[in-house]
Image (tube, rainbow, N blue to C red; front, side, top):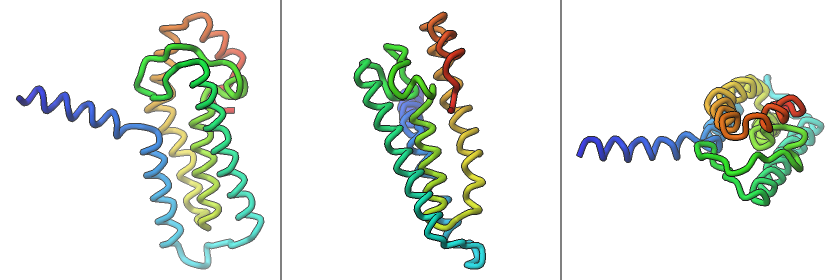
Length: 161
């Protein structure tokens, strides 16, 4: 019975340990910082609202383009699963991780929109966390499965931008 409970817990943890959960937690902290920081730290300039909106919109576009390309190639978008194809077309010609780049743009954009400039410090922390928890293991799976093709892809396409 204890082993069965452990397996269920492990499965639940895999579903909790997903990039959207990390993004949601980062966004919650960003929003919280925006509400708690002193008013004197707020910039409140329309240009920052515009920039924040553009970053969020750009992030959403990257995510949608990447999801479309992965769906077209019939491979998984779930980080912990084994990929069926190496996607190097479309937006993946520009970035090996356009979805994570999109998440990062959304985080930065909402920090600006929510007038939480201090929360911009979360952006590199978020990127580091995503890289360690998801990108490096994913690239390991791709490297094992697609060997030379993945090596060539890494030479042509950068991890982030």
